[in-house]
Image (cartoon, rainbow, N blue to C red; front, side, top):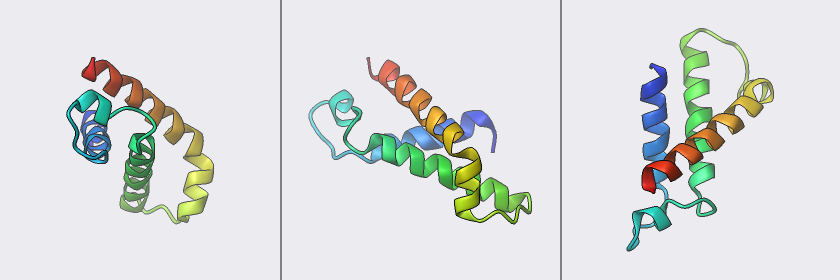
Length: 86
């Protein structure tokens, strides 16, 4: 999966997470589960890619190694989503 595709998939997960409401921007705002959805999607992507490459790291070991990167990517995607909703 290329970088653009996983960004799109993570963004879709984040946009789908909040309940439907009158404003898509309000529904997708931070604090309503969007960040958790992004973190979960990015972590799942990382674990899937590690498995595809034959890594023997456990889930916890992978998160220990790449946790900060996952967090920073989630923050970047939140900024990107906020800009797209503006």
